[in-house]
Amino acid sequence: MKILILQTAFLGDVILATPLIEGLKRLHPDSSVAFLTIPYSAPILKNHLGLEETYIYDKRAGGRETWRALKWLKAQKFDLAIVPHRSLRSALLVFAAGIPQRLGFDRSAGKILLTNTVEYRKDWHEAERNLSLIGLENADISPRIYPGTDDFQKAEAFLREKNLTGEFITIAPGSIWNTKKWPEEHYHDLCKLMKEKGYPPVILIGGKSEREICERVSGGMKDYAFVAAGRLNPLESAALIQRSKLMLCNDSAAGHIAAAVGTKVVSIFGPTVPAFGFAPYGENNIVIEHPDLYCRPCRIHGSKKCPEGHFRCMKEIRAEDVLYQV
Image 1 (cartoon, rainbow, N blue to C red):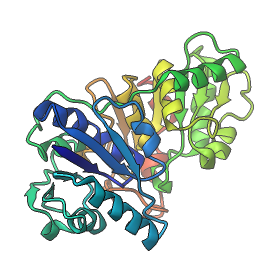
Image 2: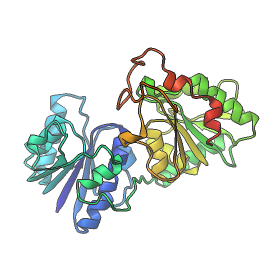
Image 3: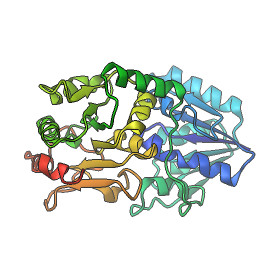
Image 4: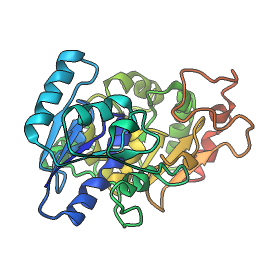
């Protein structure tokens, strides 16, 4: 049996879909499993056990790219498509490709194009919701990613360059959603406080677009806070995170990366709440959030600016509040 998993949302969503790979191999040991995703997310799937192929689909590149993806899908002659992404475009792709079995959620914008739908349970974690598509929501399968030898070598090279030989903590202060970002001055205060109290040095990670915020957070602490943002791709960052004692981050992909390599996560939630099902997966991970605020949650993804204009959900969480949980 040839099976396709299609998830073209954000990096964190792709990581939370990885349990489907192991789940499908449990159900269909002799199957061939492929994954279709976007360019930025594709590297995180490299080395994944049970995955035969990753196809990169740049959905922002226009009709020609969509036609190319459709041509590939038709040529593969998949028997089954699993579509956790709830967009119309995702459902339309597998329908147009003529894949005979197409499974997705009943809240999909393209559910009419699917052959079977499963209830989207708001009270479950996203990883469990995804597994429910194949009837394994109660299985003990966690999101997993697998940095390879080259990835660990890149991480170790960075550590040698910075002369870091002992324990360290990783911090990811960025997010694509402005309101999901704990203020950078708070991150700066946290780093200063950690340094004063003798905590291990910190490495600030993220993509190229987050390098500037990481530089500002680390300002004045060159001997303690080091910037790796923009230096490592997602899987190389995962290798570095796996070596770290702890990950501190917002409600972002960084927390899912850390959880997927077994590193404890302390994440700061503002406009969103863990009840949406997108907190880092695992019992030992910690979410810090405002204890009592009338306007939370305001968005499932966050927004460019606070709808109420005060941003209290993040501003009123202090560095001391976070350090208490570390």
